[in-house]
Length: 133
Image (cartoon, rainbow, N blue to C red; front, side, top):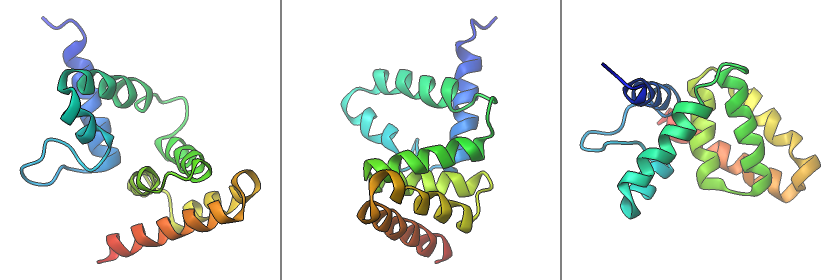
């Protein structure tokens, strides 16, 4: 008999795999914040991940592609290139094209300014180069 926690753990793992891919051999998780959180408090990291990835990111009110494009927009304006790179990859993993991601970043010039948009495009370029090679 499960209490729902097993279901939440499964949803969290499936959603994480869909967005961020399989962890590299020898790793429990990919390059995102979860690995960093675990260094400081593994139990809390698990609960934070189950909320964000298992509860919030697994919702179906909007598509995963739309959700990730929202993350790309927000992280561009916030000028958070490391997190932006992770979410650009996640957006592409769930069907966003290079052109769609670039368009979202271009649109952020309105909200974050041209320098922020340029930095976002630099991050996109780096992600595309890494994925190609």
